[in-house]
Image (cartoon, rainbow, N blue to C red):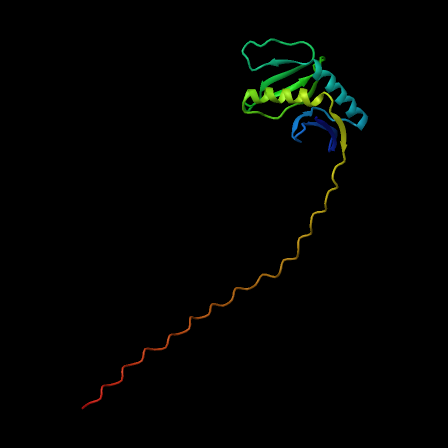
Length: 164
């Protein structure tokens, strides 16, 4: 069973649909002023998913669907994506990029499966941790003067041979 996670961002509240495995399947395409508005949008999403058809815009001659629909399309980097549109044309959700079209289709199936009876959870933003203060750097050490290599003792001269 999936979960709609509502969380606060810089521009307002936003939501993601997470599958049972914890991965984000799709994200809401709007920001909301308060939790009630975000929940209302989630309910609209669920209603539209239930009746949505699939419009594959990657085909040369695709059938334009009316009403709620998932649109499969290619983005500027030639990846496959899908978006959920309400009957009035409003974009309700967007997907991640997929390298292959079957993966995008599986993403749509996951949205359908995980949206139906997903619970709605409000996730508080984790408090920001203060950046750790940089420790004072120790004063740079002056490079030590190079020590001369110890001199090797001179080779001993051979003692003169005794004369007979």
